[in-house]
Length: 331
Image (cartoon, rainbow, N blue to C red; front, side):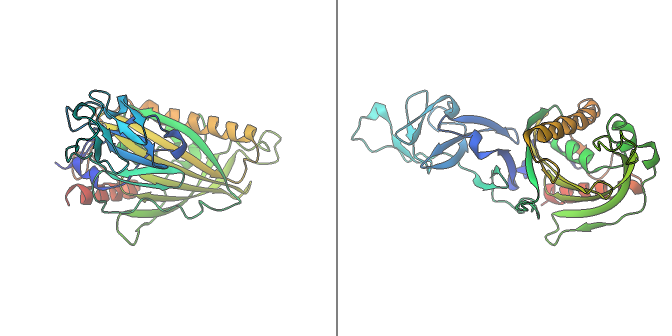
């Protein structure tokens, strides 16, 4: 049975977010990706990423430091340039020619306020965010959250809307939204993602005019889901009653078999000041906490991609999600 977990080797052939550029400095920082350790550090005015292993005796470079714009191994002091080439071995003396040792370096890019890494040649581009540069939308970042669940499980949950009335009854879920109406799923041109449009209703507790009776509690909401392999999703929300626009980007970094780091940012038109941003973050984390009560109690951190789970008509887009992941793991 084909399945996918955080350490499935085909995940090395796609892009993953690892953090915001400002979080990586001249101090080497270790991070986990697809079960392997990497080190990120600023050298030659750029963020450089290498496997977190010196080729000499396999010490962790993240325990080292930056010396003369090189990363120095903490074990024997070997120094490596921004390109990963060994340029100095102290034990050999200053005039000696260093060995032809190089660090293993993945592909790196900076896009949408995040550093992205692909350990091997990527088969697909990262997700495209159409309104990222829209001046009418304020970027509201949420601190990364480490979750004891698989990245596929987290995205599967994020894409799913049949669970809203049950899991999110304490925030926006409405008992008037139990029936999932017919909808279509359209693959993107490259075949590595899809888009789903789905209107429904919610209980809008964020609307202050609900308390005054000027607006009803149950309000229509237009949703557009955008997914891109492997674990990136953009939920575009519009509430006609209030005019609120909120794009919620959920971008997962599969770290170890049982741990995923979730990077989230909202693009909103109703957060003009710090107080409104803090309130929006607090609310979104309340919603996410409701999901975690389910996700972190699932029996294991992988999901089957062809058999092993029962699907119904309302699951058609999460089935499509599985088909795209199956294409990746069977390349």
